[in-house]
Image 1: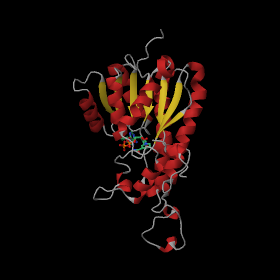
Image 2: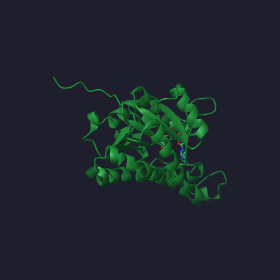
Image 3: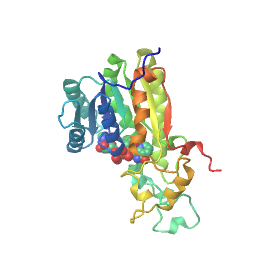
Image 4: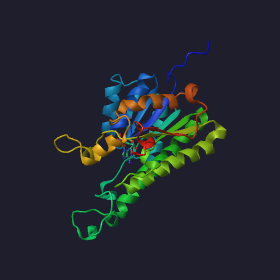
Length: 282
Ligand SMILES: NC(=O)c1ccc[n+]([C@@H]2O[C@H](COP(=O)([O-])OP(=O)(O)OC[C@H]3O[C@@H](n4cnc5c(N)ncnc54)[C@H](O)[C@@H]3O)[C@@H](O)[C@H]2O)c1
C-alpha cells in the first residue's frame, strides 16, 4: 500500500508577506490549520498582529509582524524575531503586491478624441511614479524578501511560492503596469527555480484569476452591489461562471507547500482562475 498522502505542514515555518490582505489572511489560516508555524508580514504591524490574533488567539503558532517588503533592514529585523519566536523560515510566500490606480487607463481601448477628454485617463496619463512604485512593490517586493529569507530556505531545503496573476501571460486591458509587473514575477519564479535547484530550494507560483477583493471591488461592483460591465465580461469569459473565493487557493497552496506532495514540482506557475486563461471566448 502506498503511504497515505497528507497535507500536514507540521514542523514548517511559513513566512507570508501580504499575509494581512484578503487572499493572504485566507492562506495564513489554511497554513495554520495544516499545523505550520505562520508569520504574517504586512505593511502595518497592527493589522498583521490583529489578523494573526484572529487566526491563533493563543498567539503561539501564528504571529503578525510589520515590515515593508521594499525595506531590507526591516525585513532583516523581522527575520530575526520570526526565527526566535517561530523558528527559521522553511517556506516563503511572496504575497504582497497589487495595482495602482494612477498606473491604469480608464478605458479598455484608445479611441480618437481621447486625448482631449478630461475624464479619460489614457495611456499617456499613466504616472511615471505610480508605474515605478507598482513595479517595485510586485517585483522588487518579491525579490528582496527572497534575498532575506532565502538563506534560511537554503539551510532548510525550503520552498518559495510567489503570487503572480493570470494577467502575467496575457495582459488584461486597463492595467498595463500591473500585468507587466506580474509577468516579471512569473519570470523570476522560473529563474529562482533554476538557480536554487542545486541546493534543494524549489520556487513555484500561483496565478489567481479574478477574486473579488478590496483592490478590484470598485472595478467590478457598482455602488448598488450589481456587477459592472467589466465584471459581467469576466464572468462570461470564465468557464466556472463565478469569481474566485479566497479558499479556492487553499488546495494548490498546501500542495505546493508540501514537499511530500510536490517535491518534484519546480518552476511552475499554476493558474487558479476557473478556466479563464483556457477560454478563447469562442
Ligand atoms: N485579488 C485578486 O483578484 C488577485 C488576483 C491575482 C493576483 N492577486 C495578487 O494576490 C496578492 C494578494 O492580493 P489581495 O487581493 O489579497 O490584496 P490585498 O490588498 O488585500 O493585500 C495586499 C497585502 O500586501 C501588503 N502590502 C502591500 N504593500 C506592502 C509593502 N510595501 N510591504 C509589505 N506588505 C505590503 C498589505 O499589507 C496587504 O497585507 C497580491 O500580490 C495580488 O497582486 C490578487
